[in-house]
Image 1 (tube, rainbow over the protein chains, first blue to last red):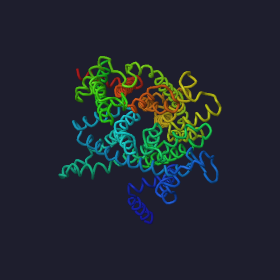
Image 2: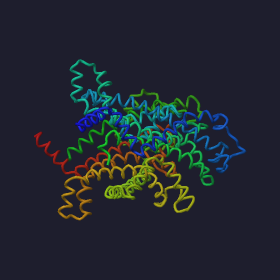
Image 3: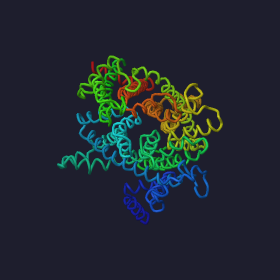
Image 4: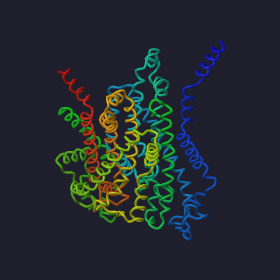
Length: 297
Length: 315
């Protein structure tokens, strides 16, 4: 008798677990994923609050020739660059630029990717063909080449670099989202919704997209890391963020000239890029395993 | 098989045309007047007008586009607006360096990535496996230009083993190869590992072991053969990525390849150069993809039988 009561209690407990809850629980169990999350939270806090303890005009971009090219010391833990600016301050401020830029880029790209992917998968046929063939054209070009062409046609600058990244990321997103939505389209509950006379827009936003959210989130997180690397790479070849702004890629490329004698100039910005990309990669992998435990080996 | 290849080649035509239209439009939108750029700011209005007529810039967009395509189909990609040399000639001068860089790092990636991935799967959760996975994570998060810079610092400027710049000898390609291969290598190792792990638990592997096949034979003949599909897919997809990556790596190591040419010609708004180059790279990537798809059939004979069956049914 008591055994039976225990059993019902256990079942009730089991029912209480929502899908989201169990995903979060699996995510929290992974030590590497939690490490990535903590890293990311620290980076986000730095990005948000660096304005409170750093003075952009006075410390980040102000040149101070008397203190140029000083090796790391207590006063300047990461040393100073060729204009006497503190490298630590600039690396910290760079967090704000890279994180905010890549977040905005991925948010916009996810929106468009989900839209195109959903349209292609849901309507199929002609719509699918047109969308996917256009994406094929963008896909035929390596990302860097496409980005260079876009920056050339729009001109240098952060905004145009962002536009280039968005255009470069959308085709991949569209493909992933389309294949995530495809199997859902023919599910019975979609048919039921349609039979009830639900409008297409509502079916897409309320029934299809929530069920395809898993792959979308994973793809977005992993692409955040790729975007951070891409922004830095394009700035490195001189197509991105313009000088005095402390973008990591730009800092690295500026430091190249002096790296023979002052290697710290190229080491610290690169380290910052790597840590941010690694945090996002860890989270992305953890999310993928948490959302679909079958994939985990 | 021949029909399949022909069909794929035909399908490439609209994509290449689309790419050319896309890039042509983008160059059209770019700020600045080409005639002004070529002649400099001191040019007289008359000479500017004359040059515009000579370049055909006074004609409408579509006319110029179709002229360009028509000439390109006849092998004439025009002359560079900067150097005045035929574009194709300049591309051919730069091409060997880029292809050496891309193929070399591809070879490095396959020769290192696949065996390490297999070992890591066979010895799952061992020290080797953990080291490999950590390494893969670090390399996939590392920006290539930073890795290249660090390698130059350590092995060129520090130890003086390799030259830091230039592409005259094979020795000068070793650091670029490693740099370019690193991030793709990381994904390849992870892919090989997970693909092998999936296969290794299958019943036919137990069967092969049970009938007494040697461990080496089980892994290489029974497991790897079946795990190869996703691995080859990744390798094929990575070639495009490698080609794009050469642009940055060539900047890091100052190699005289297509990538550095592309960056300078984009900066100088050298439209014929940019167009030809983009088409060239898109074509190259397209052919590699086709090659990978053909390779599938040889790796997985089931696909071939499917294809043949389809044809019989159609008849």
